Structures are given as structure tokens and as C-alpha cells.
Amino acid sequence: MLSVQALIQRNIHRARHSLPFFDPALRDLITLIPALFSEGSPSVGVYGRTGCSRTEYGLLGRYLGRKPDAVIGRLPDRISIESLIAIPRPSFAGRHFTSITLVCLARSGAPEDEIAAKIDAIAGVFARNGVPLEGTVCSGALEQLLVYEIMRVGIVLGGKHPVTHPDAASESCIYIGDLPGIITESHYHGRIREWDPFGHYLNTQVAEFVNEKNYPCVITIPSASPFIIPYLHILHHYEERTDRESIEKMRGSLLALFSPFPPTADIMLDLGKKWKMGSPYTAFTELDFTDALRLRKWMVPIEKDEIPVCSWPPLERYTLDRLSLGRDRGLWYVEEAREFGHAHAWVVLVWAALAGLAGPASRIFAPRGPGIRQNAGKILRGCVEAILHGADMLVPEDHLQGSIHVRDGRFFFSSDPFAILGQGNKHSVGLFEIIKKKALLDDIDLKDNAGKR
Image (cartoon, rainbow, N blue to C red; front, side, top):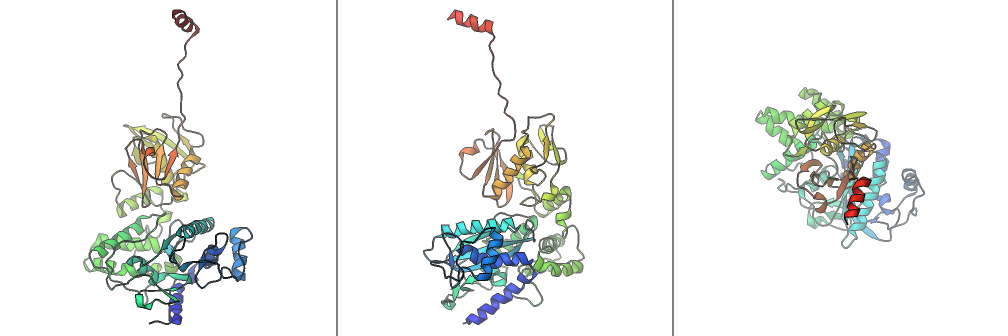
């Protein structure tokens, strides 16, 4: 059985692959997470940890923009989290090309709704600083792929240290699930609010190899980053079989996803030179919209009824000052970006917002079409914000014109009418001026009709 000191050293070893490479502001935010859980009311305590140190109190005030509601050096009155673990992941949407996933192992009987509410509040603090954050509240054994990720790159911010054998659990260690030599469960706790074609391709490959019972669980490889280890077996498999397309997609996905990620930037630079691959993968965020969408369609083909986007959330660099609606052969499209057309104008405009082409300040014109509201850009931005805050369906004012559904960060059109009446978190889209026609009777007709009565 490993001693507590050995587990602490393992945690330090995992952290050294990520924390030293982050911007100091991001390091501060990550280390403040336990204090953010205990700040305010109700306070969510982490096992074995004071709510807030003197140093953390000053940092909390800086990032909260107010006086923290916390007592320095005080142990929490109620312990709700047995172990608090942060997992850094690459992100296209993050300011530092980084997102954070929190794994909160809840104490038996703890109010999980309070923990989830705290996660949402902490996500707001991180969002104001340009870092996407999501969290999951767990109890009992975790799925194998999540255990595998925790044991490779997870950082214990407070509470008990994770172990993968039930008999190793103690006052300082918590059993999080088995870690077999070959992973056999393909369920994966991936991004909820983000999507990119490269991460999607890599996760799909992992799931396929797991289902084929061909995915070994390797924690360390000399000279290899623990962030890259999960994909080396898959890449080696395709290289042995000289599957050129799969090799290119695997290498390209790794370069695109991990080159901007600070902990792996130098490693991917060396690998890119070795593989003799550079653009467009390492500069995906620098491609124009047309080329980026073409690359996305090659990496992840568009499915039936899918609304095509390059990544989610949308990249602001694609935003246009002006968008003009056009219509040809029964399909609406955007003059400045003809990559997508649809029978309903509202679908095309919403696509422009989801793809990042339409922003709050964008001017939108429809010279031969319906009257568009003057604040259409802000309405479209509202669609993006609604989805970022949990909406899973967009419905137009005309309920006969279908709806747009969100599934795992991708968007799909449904032609079924009256989606507003169905289940789900819906957001209404009102882009067009409603013209009410009035029937007028002249005085003569009115007098004649009155006389007949």
C-alpha cells in the first residue's frame, strides 16, 4: 500500500506536467478553486482543508471584485467534498487554450445540488477571466476513462488522494474506480460546452479501440507527455498498417489540439518537425472560415440535417461587419459565405451566428426577403449565449418552420413543427418584423351594412 507521502509525490508529479506551463493568472485561479467552494453561503467544505488562507483571501478579493465572504484559517462547518480534482484540457475557446474540468467526489449524503450550484458560480469567475470550466459531481466508482485521465494528469486540489484499489482506501485515500490493463468501458466524460473536430476525432478513435478491446491503459512512457500517451497506441496501430488517411488525421488532430496547449506546445513543435506537418493543423485558428470549414468536413463529415460549424463556441475572428441574405432556387444563403443554404431564412441567420460569422455589431440586410429587425445581430448573439448557458433547442416565432437542436456541441435542424411544445430547454428566436394586415371598411360600405340590419 502506498504511503500518503508517496501519493502526494505522485500528485506533484502529475501537476508538474501542467501547472508550471500556465500563465500565473491561470495558476492562481486553479489553486483558488477550493477557497471558491468555501466562500459565500452555503459554504461547501473540502475534506481536510481550511476554507481560506490569508494569501487566498487577498487573491479572492481580486478575482471576485469584492470583499470575500470567508473567514481566514477557519475549518469548514460542513464537509461536502471528499476529494476535489482538477483536470486541465486543451481548448480552442479558452484564452490560454486551456479548459478546466472539476471532478468533485461528494461525501455520502452531501447535497449535490449545492455543489453543482457552486461549480456554476466558479465557472462564472473563470469565464470572466477567459477560461472555460465545467464540473461533475460524482459518488462511487468512476468510469474507466475518467479514472485513467485522473491518474495521468489530474491535480488533487484538496481532500483525499485517488487510489484504484478498494483495499487502499483510508482516511487520506479515496477509491475512485478500477484501472485495468485493457480499458473496456467506452463511456467518456468529455466536454459538455465545447466541440472541435480534432478532439471529436480523437475521442471517437479512443471509443472504437475500447470497444474492440484494443486500448491498453498506460500511465507513463519515458519522454512522452501524459497528455499525449492515450493516443500513441492508436497512432502506432495505423503506422504499422500504413493507413495514410488515418495517420494524417491522427497526427493532424494531435497537432491542432495540443500545439496551442501550453503544457504540450514544445513537444508538439518537435513532433510537427519530425512528421513534417505544419499548416493547416497547427494554425487552424488562423485559417479563414472557408478553409477551416473544409478542414472540419474532412475530419468529421457533416451528418444529415447538421448545421455545419468549425468549432464551438464560435471563434470571434470569423465575425463579419455585414451580412446579406440572398435566395436562389428556393434556398436562403449568406452572400458573404455561401457554404450553407436552407429553405428557411432564420436557419441560415442562426447558422451564421453559431459559426461565428454574425456578431452583435454585424449589420444584416435582406434586400429581397423578409424585414429583419434592426437589432438582429444582438438577437443572434442571444442565441449563442443561450446555448452556452444550457439551452438545447432554438425555435423560431413561426412554429411551423422547425427547430435547431444541440447534441454534444453539434447542431441539427428538425423539420417537425411546434417544437416549442416539446421537452427541453428552449430559446425563442425572433428575427423578423411581423407585418399585421388590417382589413378596412370604407364609410359607404359600413353605412350600407348597418342599414341592412
